[in-house]
Image 1 (cartoon, rainbow, N blue to C red):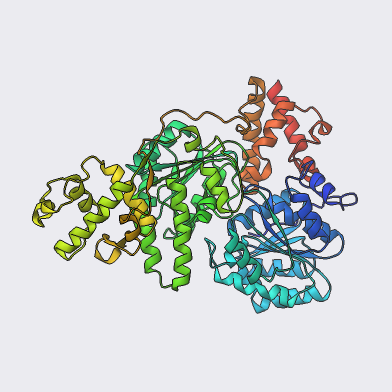
Image 2: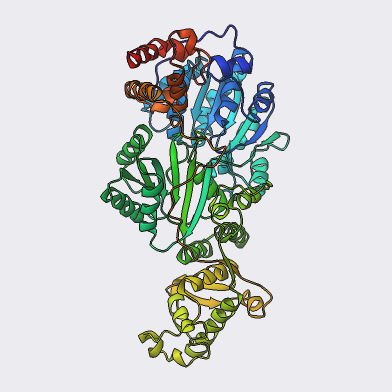
Amino acid sequence: MEYAPAAPISIASILSPQNILRQVFGYEAFRGPQQAIVDHVVAGGDALVLMPTGGGKSLCYQIPAIARQQAGHGTTIVVSPLIALMHDQVGALHEAGVEAAFLNSSLSSEEAATVEKRLLRGEMTLLYAAPERVTTPRFLAQLDALAERGQVALFAIDEAHCVSQWGHDFRPEYRALTVLHERYPGVPRLALTATADDLTRADIVERLQLEEARQFVSSFDRPNIRYTIVEKKDATTQLLRFIEREHEGDAGIVYCQSRRKVEDIAQTLCDAGLKALPYHAGLDAAVRQANQDRFLREEGLVMVATIAFGMGIDKPDVRFVAHLDMPKNIEGYYQETGRAGRDGAAADAWMAYGLQDVVNQRRMIDESPAGEEFKQVMREKLDALLALAEATDCRRVRLLGYFGEKSEPCGNCDNCLHPPAVWDGTDAARKLLSTIYRVQQMSSISFGAGHIMDILRGKDTEKVKQYGHETLSTFGLGAEFSEAQLRGVLRQLIAIGAVGVDAQAFNTLYLTEGSRAVLKGEVTVQLRESVSTPSTKRSRRAGVTAPAAANLGVDDQVRFINLKAWRAEVAREHNLPAYVIFHDATLAEIARRSPQTLEDLQGISGIGEKKLQAYGEAVLRVISLSNS
C-alpha cells in the first residue's frame, strides 16, 4: 500500500538535530554515540555504524535525512532488504509527520509509479528501497535526474553485513551497491549493521568503498538479556518448561532449523495452550504475511520460525528468543537473540544444543560447494559458537570478546547465576578415540556415536555382539562415564576437529589428523557437568529495567490498560503495529503522570509535535474517563 502524504510539521525552529529529535520524535536526549554520528552525517561525512539491535540505528539516518532536506539537499535513499521494516518505519515516520515512502514488491505497478513521481518532484524526505531495485537502470536514471539538481541528500545502507561473504546473511545484490559511490561521489553514505566481527567489518569497508569513512562502534552489550544455554535432552519438553516457568503470556520467538520442525513445535505449543504460529519460506506468502502481522499486532504470541523470520522486526516487547537448533555462528546467534528486549526491559536468550547440532553444522560446512578458504573461516566461526556453548565462565564476556570488546562477568547469564561444576574429560576423550580406532581396525567400517559409546561403557547390545566388539580391549573401559558425559566429550572432539563425521555414511565417526594430539595427551578436554535447567523463577537483576507497567500503582494501571485499549483501536485504523503509535514506555509514563492538559503531555518521551497534535486530545479523554 502507498501512504497518503503526511500532515506537514512546523520546521521553522527544528533545523538543529537536537530540535528534530525533540520536536519530531519526542525524545529529549540522544543515546550513546547517536549525536556524534548524526552530526558527522549531517555535515556530509561518510560513516560505518555498528550498533546493537535496539540501540537506535534508524535515528542515525532519519534525523540527518530531515536536517539535510531542510538544508536543501533533497531526499535520502534508505537501502534495506526488509519489507516489514520498510512498512513499519514509513508508518512510524508518517505518524511523526515526516514524508516517507517505500518501493518494494508489495506495491502494484501503479502504486510504484506514483511513488516514483513523488520522488522526482522532491516531495519526500526518505525513500526506502531494496538493493535489487536501487541498482536497476530505471532507478539509477531517476537518481541521475535528482543528482543533477543536487537533490540526493544521503544514501543509508541498512543491514550492511549483507555485503560480506563472511557475514551471517550474505546477499550478492549488496555487492552492486558500489555503484552509488562511483556514480554519486558527492553524496554521503552511511552503512549500518548490528552484527560484524573484525573480518566482516573489513569486508564491508572494502566492498562498499568506505575506506575514508569514520567508524562508530558501539558496545555490543545488551545487559537486559539473560543468556542461557542448556544441554539438549528432550528439547521440546525443555522449551515448554522454560516458557511456562518464566514467560507465560509473553511474546517470544523460537528458532528451528527445518520447516517441518517449525510446524511441529508450533503445533505442540498450541496443544499446550500457548498462542503460537509457524513461519518459514515454504508457507504460502499470504499465510506467512498474516502470521507476521499477527505477531506484530497481538500480545503474548510466540512465533516459531526458521531464520527467514526476524530481520526488520521492530517489536519492542519480545521477552524471549529460544533456539532449538544451534545457529551457524556467533553473528547469527547475536543477531537473532538481539530481537529480544528491544525496549530495554529484562529478556531471555535461551538455547538447547547437543551432539547432533555439532554434527549437522559440521556436515553443512563440509558439504558446501564453497572453496576451502571459505569453509575454514566458517569452521572457525562455528568453533567460536561451540566454545560459547561449552563455556563454564561468563557467557557475556565470551560473546563480547568475540566482537573484540572486553568486559567483566555480568551476573546475568546462566554460568554467573549458577556456576557449573567442571570435570576433566581428557581421559574419556582418549578412550573414545581409542575405541573408534580399534573398531575401524577390526571391522574396516565406521560406526555412529551411540555404538561407540555402548562399547566404551560395556553395554552388551545386539549390535555389539553382532560385530564381536565386546572383545575389544576398550570394551567397558569407560563404564564410569555416563552417556551424557561421553556425548559432551564427543561434542568437543568434533568441535576441535579431532573426530570427523561422515554424513554420507549415516553420520559415522572417524579419526582425523587432529586426533593425534589428544591421544598423546597434548590437548586437555575440560567440560561442564551435565546439569538440568535450574527450576527457579527468574530473579530480576539489579539495574535491569522491568517491563514498562511493572512499577505502576493501582490507579496508574487502570489508566495504562485503558490507554493500551485506545492505542489498539488507533493501530487497527492505521493498519500499523501498536508500538508505532506509542511505545508501552510512553503510555506508562502518561499513566503515571495523569496529565490534564496538552502542556502536561509535552516533554513525555516519545511524544513529538505531530503526535501531540494528532492524539493529545484523545489521550486526555482516556485519562479523564479513567480517573472518573
